[in-house]
Image (cartoon, rainbow, N blue to C red; front, side):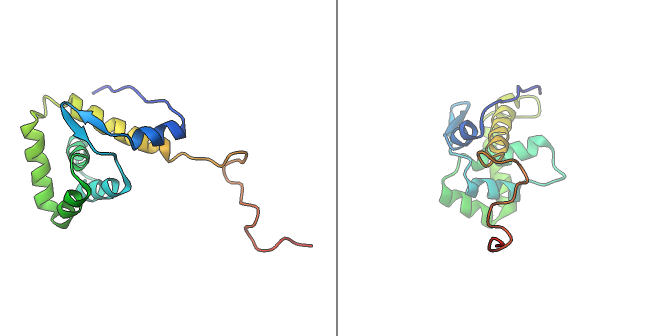
Length: 135
């Protein structure tokens, strides 16, 4: 399950993360905030990467309305996600395209959230924090 690291600037990662992708012949919708939150709720902290990959990539096959409806019934959505994965031919022994898509979504999201203020350093407080300037 060795997948290469993606190296890109924050801006490139953000644009890439919001650009539609494919897994196999299936088009994926952008990993928007809506899909990120729903995927988090469908995934379990104690689950395997495979489980979480199925949930996350499946959510990216749904329209926003379909994703919201899936969020209303977690168990049914999880079952639908696995039915989708099986229909695509994914299994414990055939997972690479699915895990590659999952890793790319997560890598792009991680890179896009590393935004820094230009000209500043991490930890520098904005100029007006703490009230009015002292005279």
